[in-house]
Image 1 (tube, rainbow, N blue to C red):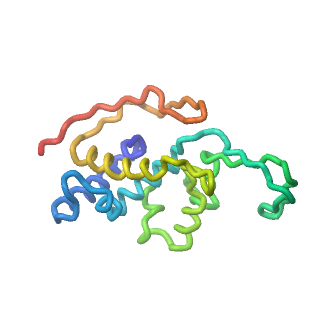
Image 2 (spheres, one colour):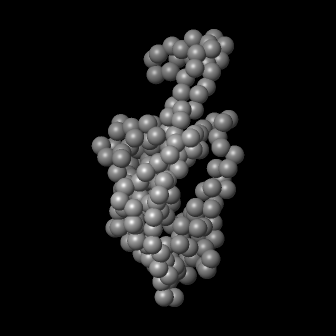
Image 3 (spheres, rainbow, N blue to C red):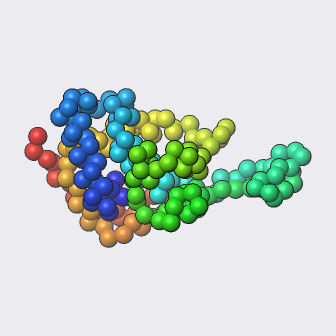
Length: 187
């Protein structure tokens, strides 16, 4: 939500998508997970939010298996520790473009980005880790975001009171002193 509020035009576009879907009968009250999956701007908002603020802020270490491994032309002997930090990976300009620190939901929309580029971004989008060590809570987290965000957006106006996001990092990266004012919309 923070990134939507920092870029008010993205919040307005998301609200318009949700209200249009309500008006056409495409979504119920409350929205279902299946309905939320069919809202491209909502799904882009979720992906972009997780890209800009992955939950973990420390490297995900792995031990190189017996025999070693070649990664991008560099050999790592067995027993070596290799790591990836999602905060760094998600800001790779070769993958996410020249503005990786900016909230730009359009980078995830199929009508704005080539299929090959979307596939490449998906491979590097690892807010829940990857492979056998993927977070067990991944699917429930995506379900919760897909249901809660549209309900908040369609029911409330938000005013961001905090200037810039501040964080604490103790494995999980948490917002610190994030202040928002809510006002219920007339229904």
